[in-house]
Image (cartoon, rainbow, N blue to C red; front, side, top):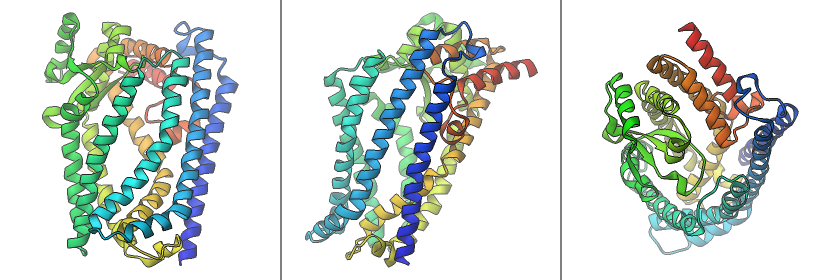
Amino acid sequence: METKLLIIFLVLFIGRIIWRFVLQQLNIGHLRQHGKLIPAVFQGAIDEATLNKMVDYTCDNSRLENKENLTEDVLELAILFLLLPLLVGKVAGLELHLIWQALIFFGALAMIGGATGIPFDIYHTFVLEKKYDFSTITWKLWLTDLIKSVLISAILMGVLLSAFMAFILYLPKSWWFWAWIFFTLFEILLMWLYPVVIAPLFNKYEPIKDEELKGKIEILLAKVGLKAKGIFQVDEGKRSKHTNAYFTGIGKTKRIVLFDTLLASHTHAEILAVLAHEIGHWKKKHILKQLVFMIAASLAGFYLVYLLVNWPPLYDAFGLEQTPVYAGLLLASIYFSCIGFFFSPLGAFVSRRYEREADKMAIELEGTSEPMINALKRLAKDNLSNLHPHPWYVWFYYSHPPLTERIRYLKVMEHEG
């Protein structure tokens, strides 16, 4: 059985590497073939020089992503077949409580993975993003962000892992259920706390300053029975010139966040259109729906992990003579990561559907699609977006409809409305 398990893992792992590489090459090839053509819906909005810059930016990001993915894959294999048996032997031999063993085990792996990712982050931030005049971050701020991120991640993962190990130790037959309950409550608490506790550690959030724009926002929100206190601007410009807006939080902490770069580069009409789109997500309860799905899926996931960590062939497949449960948790998570990769299109499909629903509500609130179309064109230009993604790449990865398709859809929806 252990041989079959190993073969299945290798098939999934190698299949992920090949399919990911194929999609990247298809996307780059499609871009090189069509990248010289300005889509009809973008005529007059971008020029040839900007289009060429969009192509170069996409290709450079893809090349860097390929190298990072390959490095992560090699590291994962090295950990599984070289480091893991040694690390398990060392940690299991410590005269420590099992919870402390688990914290040391996963802490060591997190440090290795984190250290490997730092060079790629540095290159992306200070070389690639600088090359295209996006990055504005200083080394001091980058290092401060890194330290904060590591500390917050360590605290959160430490709490989760300690709780899981405690359930495994003291409720061995039903730990999967209680771990699921704890995980669900933890996720909900984190979603509630993130906008008001964690995010402000990195950025300054404040109500919209532009009084004229604020008045227009209040009129827009009144149409759907919302109050302006949930609309914030964030000083993202100290890190990057990229523009964006997003919805975050639940309950009383839910808010719509607009980048200061977006506020500086877009007209009031375009900002209101973007805001109307985010309100669409709010009113359609998209985050709540995603949360419900996550809760249901995690219940099945915890039960499967419970079965796997108590199954000796799982450990034998990777040459582990000692079988501490925390090693089983790692092996199960790697298996699920490989399997989950091939389910990416399902999540992407649902997300694209939500985006269309939000676009539709934006038209209903604004009464026209023109501001939203203008905003998307400007966002594409400001962020050097890929205007010619390969259909298969879109199907597998894209959480939003491609920009050209999205603009055409907006025009059709307004015409039908």
